[in-house]
Length: 134
Image (cartoon, rainbow, N blue to C red; front, side, top):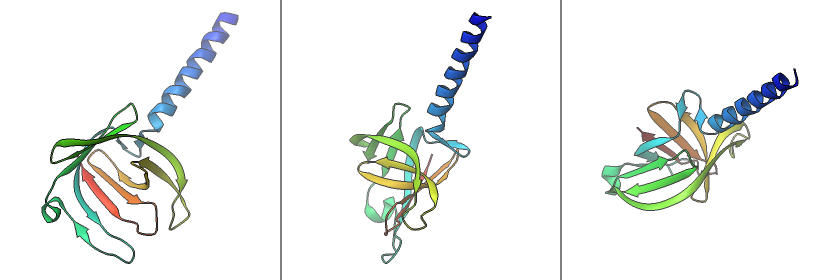
């Protein structure tokens, strides 16, 4: 009986750790772990603008790894590797709870994440929206 109880606790602990690690990189119906191609950025607040690879003259992609790293590429040349972290937190503008992602010294609200789309919004007064596709 004691062996069954210990086995049950071990299975429960394993399940909890697995679900916690999966939850930290999965939001809604998509996983952030993948390669994302920058499609456009849209300025918010007092500075509305739209920037695309064509208007700015370069391509950008980011790769989120399961190990918590983000690799940034400009014109397919690796320019930076840093850590990322996903957690719940308050949005700057609405003070509501959101899924937040922090990388390269900035925090963003994950506005949309599914199998094909990633939209993040800077969590500050500017609220710049950046849209990526797989």
